[in-house]
Length: 275
Length: 298
Image 1: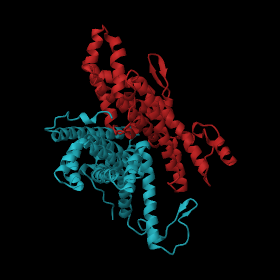
Image 2 (image 1 turned 180 degrees about the horizontal axis):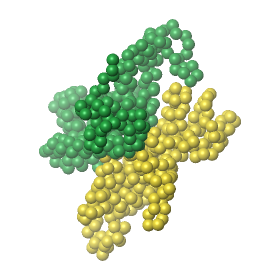
Image 3 (image 1 turned 90 degrees about the vertical axis):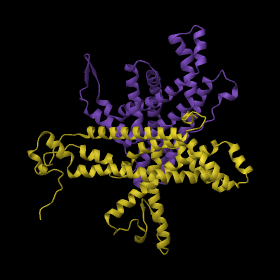
């Protein structure tokens, strides 16, 4: 047991560069596998949480753009959604990595300011950027669908109360859109966390063997030639992660629907395969 | 005997003299590129086999999940549940090794009952030579076919679980009175299942299955991770910079190859979308509901 504590203190934050530098090479214990794979999970949470939070705002903007009447706004938004939803994330990662590698190392001059580009070839920034755009496109499609389903009566009532423009959007259209989109958006969030496992298998190198949960599971499976231990461990961690996401999202759902009678607040979460 | 090289065009015989369009034409039709084009066929082959097989797996899973026999029901429910919380790529990486080892272990039990050493020795997985899959003296193409079949089976298992989810939902979406009417006409529950439930189920399943097809198309590049020489492999192989010792030297062009793959997939998903839309519209002909209404959020 004390041995396991030592392993935990050595490897718990290995994936972000703290603790023991060398990965275990032989006599792999269960404790090592649990610790390292759990350590890698930090990356999955990092990628998923930030991409989701940032993507939310871009998605709202793109959904509104897609619903706009002006083709100069609508067309680019439609293309953005089409390109990111129509191609595999795996290929997007490869393509983006090659693109980032080609950027000049010393940065790009924009209006006298130098935009740093070096870190885009690193997973923490480059892959995050791709995930951000990807989830924004998928969420935008969900929000766009919800935007079209906002009841006309609600909007007319808002106008009758004298709400226009930004106020109408902020108080009526946007909250209703979110309420309608929320179950599907929960689903998208889950898929996004799952998609983060692709990062270190798609061009972006795991610098100093700092990888995500699947990276370490794959490491153990390669070394022990036994897939029956590390992969179920990743699966277990991801089930926990998925359950937490569902929990968090249903809390927000309850807040969004707080004006409704109590039984309508709960979403019976039925996982959909909309990605 | 001199090495014979297949040439698409006569003028490609000496690449160093070529320029401009002729160079491009010869470059894009050299031996390696022609092999690479075949790998698009690999993707299509995977789709063509996986789609029906996973539909069959899904049908079996959904039927099992509805079964009256408890253990069978648990099996079906468990199968449909596995893909919900876990990334599919974990299953891909897992099943390819796990299935291989499972098959070899079964053959080991059957062919070498006298073998006393354990199968797992430290970090090795050892079975008797007769149990090896494929046998060590098998020709190269048997190895390749075996590897690809494992990948197809892996895809089918994972997407079968997705399909089971969709079909299970669709079977429950068929209005209950339809079955009751069938029973009132004296059909047994088996007859009602095959003659009423199944034909009516498809229209409810179609939005989910369309979605699944899109996910399947977008999952095909993961073949690369399973060690198949697929289009991603060739994009990296051909795109990498080629020094002067090559017939067609060029700098690193990987990005253009990936751009081509991106366009290929965009075209494939776009065509699928149009075809599936048309199919949905045709199948929902005469139904008093919005054709794509079932595709909405759950």
